[in-house]
Image (spheres, rainbow, N blue to C red):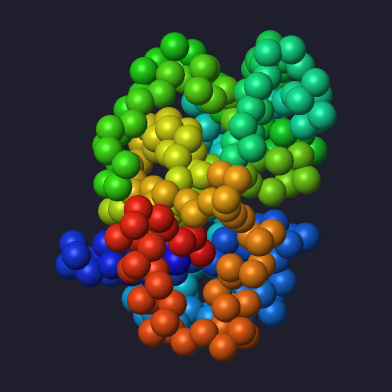
Length: 268
């Protein structure tokens, strides 16, 4: 129920709740999925502010309609020397020595293509190659999470050079949400704790792009009896599945509050 938690945080701060459709993954995003999101959230009783997008349209932000803004950010990062072209596949990174990773995060990039940084100077489009942000190795980063407290991490140790644009010509999650959060004037990002490390990456992007960073609040995730975090593959706990099983919004709200009192949080 991450979106509900975001609504609560917005109300507590006297702010507004904004909805964004992150549909850049062409293989996993379809119009019927977006329609289902609206239907489920409205059924649950959630409402969000609707207003003008940067492009002039009214309604929730839709990432697939905002490519020009991501290209502008890519060009600034390229021109300022923050990113470089990378020819490594995910398999290459996984196979590289010293590239440990957890289930919830990407493998630590070993810097194989850093020597190709000079190639960025002649690039005119991002397509055809991966583009990575060169992190400042050894820099201590920190922020205060609204729910989890003080967070610290060392660039190059907690995370490595990360993707900002994929070779199939799609901007990465890290770049797109950074650009959109700034454009939407987001003051607090509320999301699951599985994206905690991403906050450090995005703080670097905000700085490189000259944008003001929002605050972050990461909600703890619910786990099964073995301690494994439940994810989208666990359809039995999705809002749509619970709705189909006959649960009412009131029952789900009551259950959510009970679990929170016990120190457990449901995730959307």
